[in-house]
Amino acid sequence: MKLSLSAAAAPALELDALDIACRARGLDGIELVVETADYIQSLAARVRAARARVVALRAERVEDCAGLLAYLSGELGVPLSIPLDAVTGGVLPNLAQVFADAGGTLLLGFATDLKQVVAVTAALESAGNPPCVGLAWELRPSSEDLGASGAVLLAASEHLRLVRLYGGGPEQHQQDGRGIGPLFVDLAISGYGGPIVLTPSTPTELPRWREWLASRQSTGCGSAHSSGEHEVDVRDVEPRDRLGTILGAFRALPRGATMRITLDHDPSCMYYALEESEPAGTFSFRKIGDGPEVWGAEVTKT
Image (cartoon, rainbow, N blue to C red; front, side):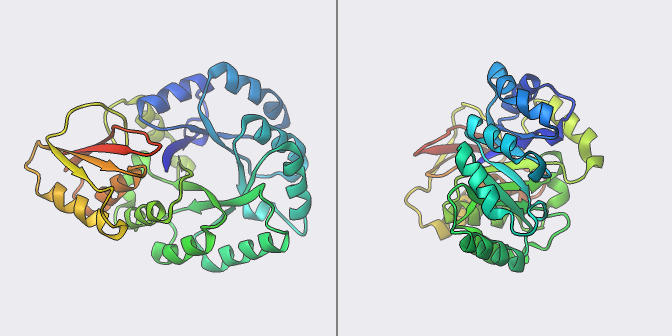
């Protein structure tokens, strides 16, 4: 799993500036928000010129410009997500064909609602499970009950290719105690390897996101290279025991000490688990490795 950022968090930033800000924050890529046909036609060239690390595309509707969106998805080699209600009637088979012809990928966004995800997976099966169509989880911890998230993950896992987290970043502490940490651990254990895209929960949060991006202080998942005082390698630990092992080792650290963790999956979920379980301001977290077989993180008790 790799943490990325939606361009919705900084709509006024040019693509190259947004990429620089994401790199400074240790974020692994950008989700571009596509709004107009003219924008679509020039976007592929702009991405190449900026050398931006684009991991996904987002549109709120698709039917009036499906061909262009499918072309852009295929040209950039990244999926396009849309809200589930943007696909009306029996248009899914036609959309699947358009994206297949263009070499693109379409992802249908669903809420943390078991009935909804069961219905959409059934619709995919009825359409023949086209390989160019998958699912994107629209995760809203500030307004959704994540109590059923485990069942939702189980139902969606075969088709899940993107997680869009409404929150995170400067909103992390507002979402403490809402189950994000355990869910991220479940995602890692399930083998999910797609992007996790952070996006503002509401437009009123945009000023905070601008400030957060402008600041390069170490907050959340970042990248660094420093030596740890304590080594914890959990690659041979049973997945169900890894979180407990890491939390136990962290709690045993003296203040100011650093623990280096070695894993066989992206450590971002561990950051959220620490956010969930530990008091605010008691640790800093930095990614120090990026796979594909070995990942690392350093956690310092502050």
